[in-house]
Length: 153
Image 1 (spheres, rainbow, N blue to C red):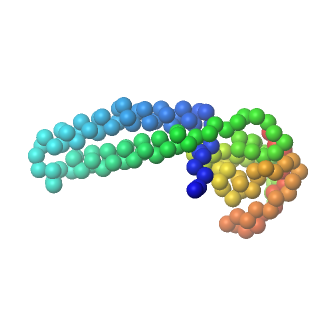
Image 2: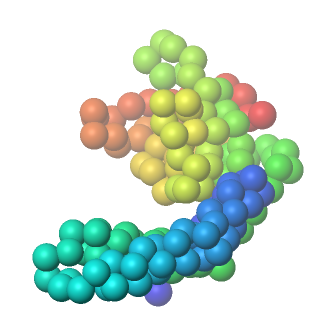
Image 3: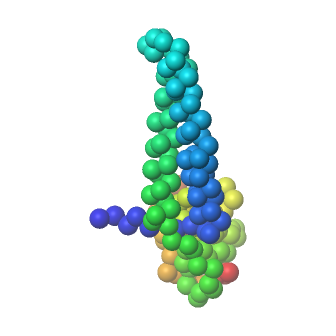
């Protein structure tokens, strides 16, 4: 069986719970009302509003299921400092003569443009469990890169 743990910050978990509440309590009832109103108009085969609302309902219910899975399998990222890179660590590395800073996060919060890399990505998983001053060779789509960990924050 695959590892279904979804690592995330407390804030991300709260955001997911808020989204789920909005879907269940506001969006789905609103869509249900639109579907009911469209049914009142008669012939459903040519009723674009009915088909659009029905498609939106399928999406909303699927999203609720997805959010439920994420919330039920969530594990809050520890903010505890460590000598080893772990999920939640911010690290400074040197690669190709340049210093870069990355924060290792769960897949739900990954945003490589801002330096937040997933623990499941090739780069993020290569850093996990490593310590300061270690050099790591990572096989990336752009080729093998050598990273040296300068600091673990």
